[in-house]
Image: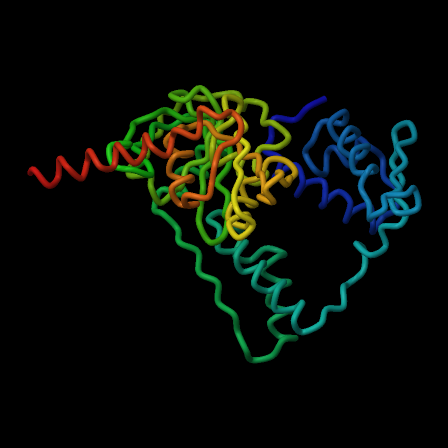
Length: 317
């Protein structure tokens, strides 16, 4: 049984369930479902999936031991989740930085358990303080409320290049923070697919007060590169680059990186826009080539020609 919630939300809920089971050891399925506001069949499916997780080499003794027996679930080997962790100073600073970043996201509870834990961590670390600043658009809270209420909104959105400004109706799923920036995950009715929008590029938001049923989210949504370059309509392009440029493509890779006969890295990248790919190839330099499908290698020329045409128009004006 699937769940329409975003994968990140489901993962946070599952971690909370595991932490609870670490404390109590055993609990009725019905009680867990009520406590964490999830259907019993969904909870069982996610616990069965968690039981397949563990540490390399993923032998049976390294997997989580979760036993669903009738209407009860029992957990073994989760003691590490149920007791306070001992951190080195370096680990404490890293945890504090992550906690502050989470608290900076609009909608986080400033006096909730995370804030309380952070205060205790600050006290243990001493007088030094680490401040994390997250750029927050004035529209972030509006988008978060729309996502929570499952209500569609109309956006005026600035694209990544001139002339790409659009007005579109979207069904917000979640506002997420990545590397200090806020993004909106939503189903875009204009594109007919899932998209991730940079919140700071949203010029205006108009609530439509139109309820919607959240659409299923693919399991790989939010994986490296997938949400940034399109959903189901994306084409996987295999891009060959010199090893020195391989690191620039790895964050976008949607599969294993290979080597060709000339010693170059061949990176699979999901592409939903020829303009996106052309701009990417220009940034990678002349050593980058699309080896499959080969016709996509022409996108760099298309983007360069369009840029030259705009430059010529500007010079004539």
